[in-house]
Amino acid sequence: MTGVSRVVDVDGIPVSALLQEARRPRAVVLALHGGAAHSGYFDYPGRPHLSLLRTGSALGFTVLALDRPGYGSSAPYGGELAPVERRVDLAYAAVDRLLASRPRGAGVFVLAHSIGCELALRMAADERGSDLLGVEIAGTGRHHHDDAVDILGVRHNESWPRPAAGSVRDLLWNPSHLYEDDVVGGARFASPSPSYEGVVARSWPLVLPELAPQVRVPVHYSLGEHERVWRSGPAALADIASLFTASPRVVVDEQAYGGHNLSIGLTAMAYHLKILSFVEECVLARASAAQERPGRAS
Image 1: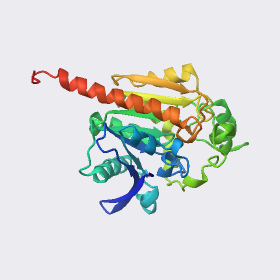
Image 2: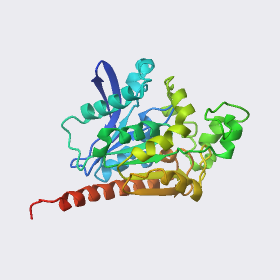
Image 3: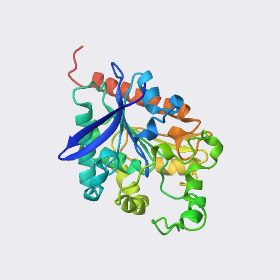
């Protein structure tokens, strides 16, 4: 079974998504794709072992892969979605409409990849974010990998990637042996990016340290062992973890044999199982907190 395509109207803007439901979900996983892609990133055709939607639903989680604002059905409205508040409001409203009366279990957990982490952390930092179960961010960081400095023309005192020698494709898809041959390049889920994402890319190294301390829910942060866009390794993982000063729990993980695109690499199943395990722990934490509230029935 593959994800079901859904489209809802949010104040005149159509928002699309892929939805795969569990009958009695432990929770809902809201998946946010990266740049130049669409929600199909989380449900690659013909490769069920790579699919977050299939793995999640098989383990009792409803998975909602949203086409982020400016992608999918909302692509024609990308020019109107530059304001941060507009995008956050659109995402929250779309989730409410897409899930409607469907059971949510313990609540909604947000999993985001690459530049999709900007929307995830803005949602979590919003006053509505305290209701989220937690957040997973992957394929992002604070400082660019040395390879990206050379290829993108980034300098450590600059925040704008300006393409230079080399190939952005090399950063995203090498080592290629970490992916199935037909997956490399991502042609089956490629999509034009909305213009506002140029601003997001330029400002992200400065925005991340501002947003992180505002997140008050559990955070999981993943980087592939072979990540080449962002600095990886123990020091980089610890650096990002240190930013989430208000989060009750922060877990970091380096995915062995993983590249930039963790959800469609050969280690996708291993990665998804780790994150779903973390989601389950967030479910248990919420249940425990409810039991400990003063005045609960004995």
